Image (cartoon, rainbow, N blue to C red; front, side):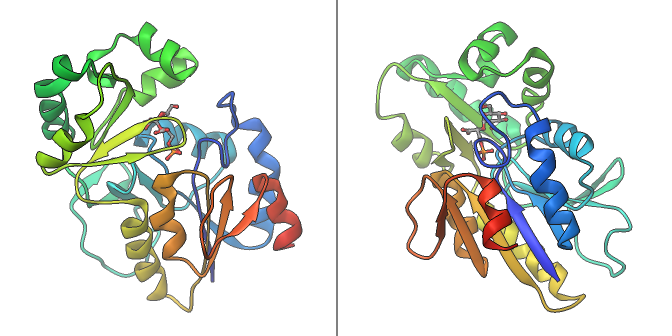
Length: 243
Ligand SMILES: O=C(O)[C@@H](COP(=O)(O)O)O[C@H]1O[C@H](CO)[C@@H](O)[C@H](O)[C@H]1O
């Protein structure tokens, strides 16, 4: 069985956040029989938008490794999960949003931090370039915050002192609990392994993708140097490399 973990921003999805250009590579991967697992800092709500647009129905990993959403009935065996949500079993690896927001609220004025929880929708659109419809989905955070702007350095250490993790994504900093995209990918590979032998792949472009590249058999990196990963310029190059 072949499973591919895909980062979204600047990997599967381009600068303008539109899903259409990704349709070709998604069809290619489906034809090749890949299970397609989105593994992004994006929220469940944002990822559901792309899943629907690209007709992808495999499990997905949200908010930088914070939770794995597994459609009910996807695996025929039982596995431990943290909660049920609509049609999904959710395995939680991260920390709840309230705790993360509270920690940031404590230091935001000292460092001039701007993140989803203290920004208006107009500011979010300006910082991210997201269209309004997607900005409204990005606000629905469950396990992480995104730091768009800061006035003073030193906030990273303060965040870590509060027991949280801060990592660089393709554009911004993400604050989470003690998790990453690699931990979540590894756990999902473990579940797939109960069905048969897994050949795992991953593609990413940011520092927060490195842990994910480290746990797969075939890592691919876009504009990112990684000792084991094969460098590609765009995700479409996968069609030549694994064609
Ligand atoms: O942290 C980031 O740089 C981006 C991209 O994260 P990924 O490369 O998809 O893990 O994620 C944040 O910003 C996006 C908008 O640019 C939002 O859509 C995400 O919800 C947010 O986590």
